[in-house]
Length: 309
Image 1 (cartoon, rainbow, N blue to C red):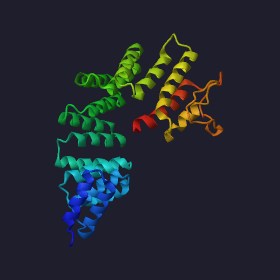
Image 2: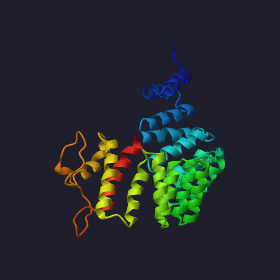
Image 3: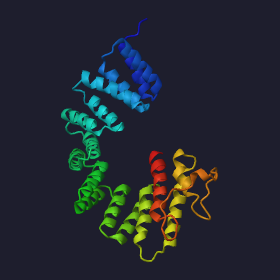
Image 4: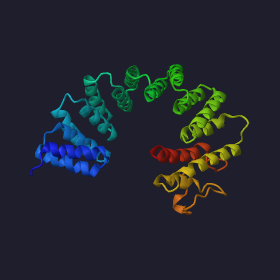
């Protein structure tokens, strides 16, 4: 019995819903072999390819879907996401704008447009898009967070702080906002307040690396701490990171840092390797790594591992 394109599509869709991506892809391809201009199949095949990490191929399918079905919001939105993934924010912004012409109150599209515009350097445009996202969904915390970042980037620190405070009225336990508020406090010389705010962020989100890193950097402004105290705090930060990156490819920066001190951090399974000698800035007088260099290594390890778990 001949299987129709629609039957192939339904089989593919069932596989897709169950997360069986390889099977879904094959079935969508069978559908398109019989009926090459099916927008639904092209859209879903593009989504599957993006999930499989084949974003360039996904863009081909999604563009075809958007051309065949120009009134399909999902085709333009997903195309924008794929273009943003491959580092083409200007093209992504164009796709998001088309999607918004079809669904003008979609908060997610406004938010993604803000990200795309920010990556093109249009910070003011990004700020406007985040405001639209918040108007569409006042509980879009990421949009509120990015709006504050945009204000800060434009030099409007007071407004940025007000935006963060407004966000925290909606979500008092939202650790990323608390962390960013501490950064603004530090930037405006409110170092003691920043330290208190960072401790609050750490208590709420003990696995979030940014507050811990910022606590360490803020200690540089503490008048009662010596360089030795700062290095000890830096090592504690490094130990915290090391417990979370063991066995990950991204642990290379941390492996470099493990060789810095007479009693270096030892992580089970790692071996001494001269090839991983650290390439760090050093103080011209003491010839020891500067605090900012050390923390940059820890931050690299945290950003590369914790954020991708």
